[in-house]
Image (cartoon, rainbow, N blue to C red; front, side):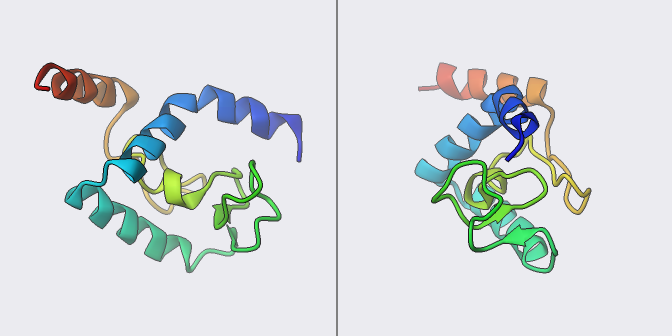
Length: 106
């Protein structure tokens, strides 16, 4: 695995953390979006069920294009498919504002 994938993961650390949070604290609308996204991924030739191209071992299925765990990537609303098969639903700035509002409400 090339260094470029590790650098890309570091750059996308906020999106990875968002996916982890949304995987732990499940919300119905995010789960519906994740399921719809994964249905698209199942038809893609970049789907890696064995984990050969995963950025971190043991996180399969992942995307062979970017190395991301699909369990996390599909739950990150600010993430998009590297092949353009599904878009981000919100920008990182919108995501930050939403998180801030949610934290203020707790």
